[in-house]
Image (cartoon, rainbow, N blue to C red):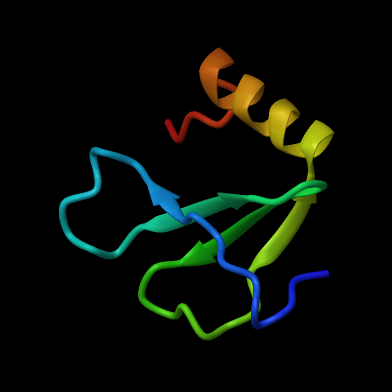
Length: 66
């Protein structure tokens, strides 16, 4: 669970130039994802295993929009 007092290091892709990007933060147990335009909304939370599976799928081209 994320508490308001926690300071997270939010990162976004270096390819993001418009400011309308997805941001990611790592906690001890979870990976959090939020919309950079709506930072006050509750971020999505994933386990480390879920995040690693997603990243592997992206790298393998599993999410191509053709």
